Length: 237
Ligand SMILES: NC(=O)c1ccc[n+]([C@@H]2O[C@H](COP(=O)([O-])OP(=O)(O)OC[C@H]3O[C@@H](n4cnc5c(N)ncnc54)[C@H](O)[C@@H]3O)[C@@H](O)[C@H]2O)c1
Image 1: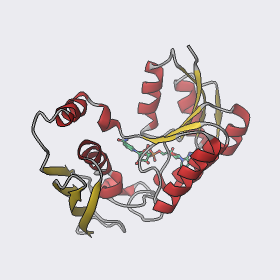
Image 2: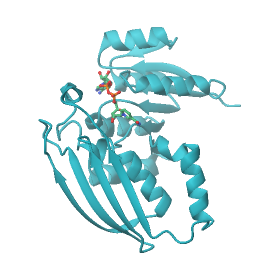
Image 3: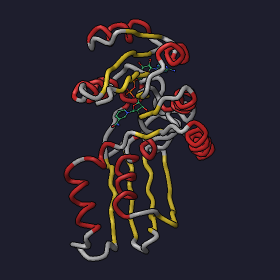
Image 4: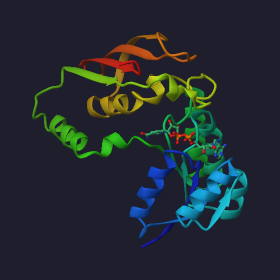
């Protein structure tokens, strides 16, 4: 069986879960390099996980290592450039959410995929849980009849300290609040289960946290199959 050469860019909090998953697939993947702009962090991460080489510059890593697959686990504002560089180097990409922060960026990622024959996927792990898989099957087999009404609630709590991490809470670095950062998982699942939506009305507010982006958003949506849905994304709940 082919063993794919994998590199991880960004060795902060979520990278600890990426490496666990990669270790569980060790027959199929070999982690050849890690990258972080913080030298001490990437050095410690590489040592802890027996990754043979580390870099502080992603471009240099891509040039020297030519990985088959790149995991991107950096803050949102860095994703787009790292995705494009990785795809152009010939690697496939698995990137943390949100994949990027504008529709123009998504369009360009699709173009580069087509030009290079590579593929970029986003981490939407909720689709793969047994509950989601079971619900998908129930919907597909119409065990509940035709879906008519759905609710998609991400009513979470993140305190003021959570937003002290420098990249959080700002348009330029996080790209949005709980809509892009937290409810994105449930909304992805909602779309995956009920299909594309054709009409959306929404409101956002920054009600309590001292941040630029919203701390709550609400939407009502009409799906292509005429079902109606209600969405709440909140870090105040
Ligand atoms: N899928 C999920 O459920 C889930 C959960 C938490 C976080 N995330 C996502 O994971 C991403 C990272 O979040 P985190 O909590 O691990 O952040 P973090 O701040 O803990 O780690 C990010 C790391 O990336 C490094 N970095 C920044 N710019 C870089 C660059 N250009 N090249 C290389 N390294 C760079 C930082 O030094 C840091 O070590 C975010 O997009 C976040 O939304 C996803």
